[in-house]
Image (cartoon, rainbow, N blue to C red; front, side, top):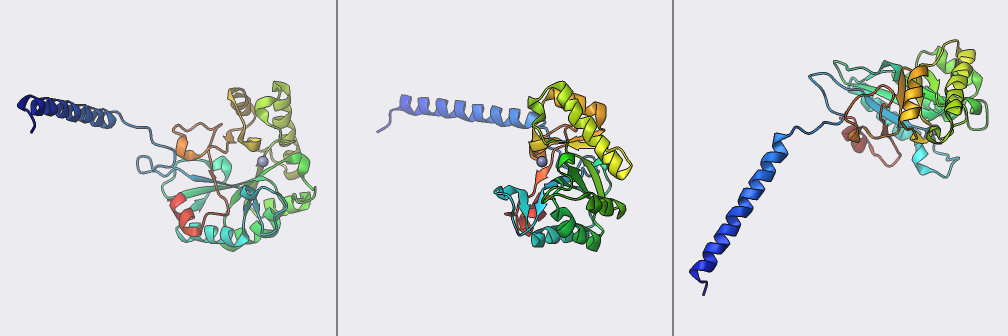
Length: 256
Ligand SMILES: [Zn+2]
């Protein structure tokens, strides 16, 4: 049914296929693949950097991704606390001997006081809130009095999310400098210290933004996922975006 030459030809092609596949496997394992920032390095832990906005059951924005329910947020803080995570502020990014977490809130919504602050006090958890300084005291945003009370508790570090929440990658250098300088001035006038950390509005940045950021701030936070960032750059620290569709087992997997 099959001629001898046909069988020999098949064997030759199969052998070539196996050899090619073996070479591909060897090449794949021969080159070390970069590891994302979520890995443990040389026995040291890299802080898990988490990004939240609003913690509220009553949504005042159409954007679902901005919200986490108070119930979910508390169960996440409880899990971190019970598993011995230390809560670092955003300016304390460093390799640690034990698991650590940097919890950040962008925009400075009022529920960071009404919903988040009581949970922080209950678990002695520390977080960083990035303020849009022009929005302080406006509807749905933190008031000066609330910011001062949270700051005095020692549980909240307030840092800059610029003055007007502009897309920094599309404005002039002088406007970028204004956003960095003036937001720092406002926070210093309110709380008596100069912020050393910025988070870029809507996560938008480019080389110019990160270079100028380094002149004003020791750390800059993005909304990039740590899963795809391989090198630590203090002006471009990625964060895990926490949304309300994560249940506690999803969250536990994220912070593992
Ligand atoms: Zn924002």
